[in-house]
Length: 102
Image 1 (tube, rainbow, N blue to C red):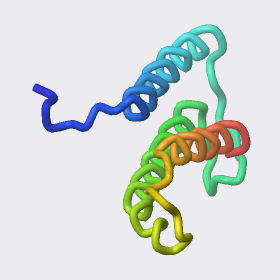
Image 2 (cartoon, rainbow, N blue to C red; image 1 turned 30 degrees about the vertical axis):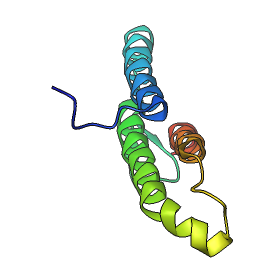
Image 3 (cartoon, helix red, strand yellow; image 1 turned 180 degrees about the horizontal axis):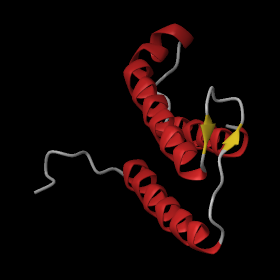
């Protein structure tokens, strides 16, 4: 069923983190209902809104990294393509920034 997908360790960790975040957000919402808050995003958001926006941003960071990783070899004179773990760390940092300050 999932033969078409490249299930590498970074991909599995990324989706595992998403599942854990959704479960954690559900428990957090049950214990402490959210209120609208305004951060650097151009609208008032709840925790769930920021999670959704952050997950979209994390996905775009990962896609951009995959798109440009082959070109980075030529640009920076690297011996091989950079590790996908770099984009994972950057995307999780973007997600954390949006959740905290967004």
